[in-house]
Image (tube, rainbow, N blue to C red; front, side, top):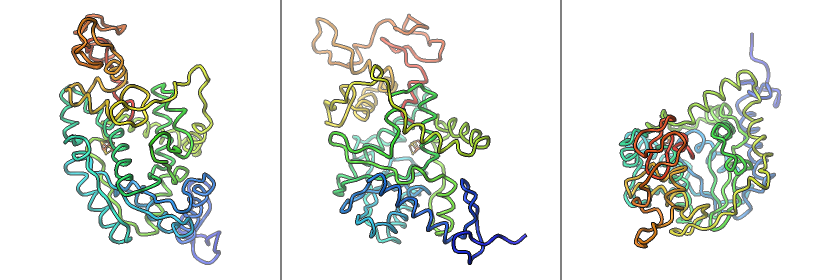
Length: 381
Ligand code: SF4
């Protein structure tokens, strides 16, 4: 049976049916519709004002490649300038090839590119070094927790370096729905309430950040890249199979098979969620070390680096992080600063084990004053 005619231009043969609407379009009309929808997202959300210098988080993958290409097309109409910022996490055998893809995109599109590296920003720590440090305790699945926090900080630093006023990232609707699911599965109400919307307006000293592809499905991102003949890097990170996100992705795929609108429904649900006043966390303060927004003494990035530098990476996450930062110095020994590992010795306070030596029934490790269970270790994947 011959392909139907494009329902937009009524001239060319349709090359696809849009996954959500079922509309039959030719490649050229689909790409025009995709770009118009991203433009609408940016304008309706007032995400990028005229004159903005926009740092595009570029990884070489499909999402950031499509985002950079679409914004480059829209830049004259939006009155913005673009600067690609790539982060080198220091993942051998993976990131080097991805950065080559970003470099060739920047050259092809004549966009400036700046690469910032974890090793330079974080006192020599690379993701491979973090993985070695956390794997020592059998916790390789916590890599993405560290990487997510550090990459956010690195992108912020890179954006400041190039004089950007705004940051955009390539998260699509599927990514957002996975994040919503993960937060539900962890019972993380605070993140659920913060995760809605199109980004953050730039509280404190942080730059405004947004996700113009937030309502674009992953399938359409791939289709756009196909019809625009965009080349991107598609290898999976070596640490990705361990991430909790993979479980949320599998679950979402099954949900979507039963209910095609599940992805967008989840994204919109998160937008409408609001915490009851009694459940709202106190307004964030500033990190005592770097001045970034923080809900504890240290921001997430400084707390993770602190844990790594002390040789206690597990204690920088979840309950352990609260202990590291909130435990007061032992009486009579003022030289023990808050978070000093010595201050953590003592009986475990978890329900399962109180001897501070044997693992609790949840499979956690009792590390002194509290028990760090696996669920703590995936707080930010
Ligand atoms: Fe970082 Fe995890 Fe992504 Fe790899 S999969 S780049 S470790 S967040």
